[in-house]
Image (cartoon, rainbow, N blue to C red; front, side, top):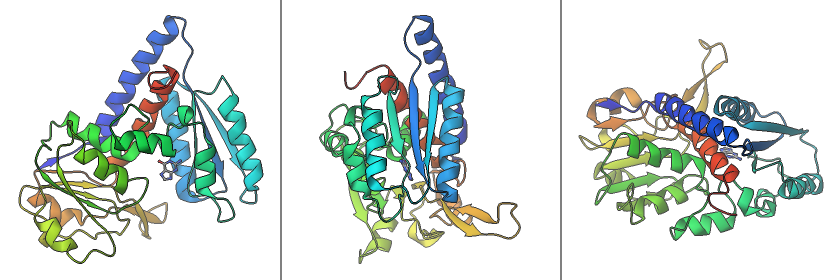
Length: 293
Ligand code: GUN
């Protein structure tokens, strides 16, 4: 069994990005600039956004954090999005999700200029991704593809089961794993909360990508000997022995599943750090105007 060290790969990629940024700046080009909008004080969102700002620093990017209280109106937020769309200083920006109930996430996402949508959530980017055109690919699926590349994991012709059908992970992951490319060329099945045959599908899978958000859902008896298991879950499970009061828990029962795997990602330290680094890669692409002029 090979433990996929997402943290180490992410550190390596950040170094590669930082080197590229320094050579851009030495050539008189602009330093890439990412802005993040954070609404409210959700613990998870605070942590993720702080990690994104920190990663910008490591990569040599400029970053701006724009905060609003939970009672910000949808109009106020949309005005800020339009302002960032127009701001030539900002190469790309994100609005951290989830948003309070009174704000339409879809409206916010569709208001972002797709050319600055480094999260890859805008329908233009999602559509282009699904037909294999250059675009911003959403961070978590893109981070997983990069792990396949860096560990040279074969995907062609493999049976890949994606657990979960979210717009952020499950759907784009399935589209990418079936694309005619490496990583990809897999036979993809998407299972979700209404699937009748989820356990049997998993037992037959060469690759399982678990993104249900249900701690310890994937058990040893659901995994074939030699399977590749990618765990996207990051649920905060209460744990009195931790200083934070919680334990970040994956969708895979790691201790019993790991011995059966050819490759497996841990939680934390697997997919999570790759998600942030994928956002950094998109910001670099935005700064270089590599995808959209
Ligand atoms: N919330 C959870 N994951 C993400 C992400 O990748 N981007 C944004 N903007 N919000 C999130």
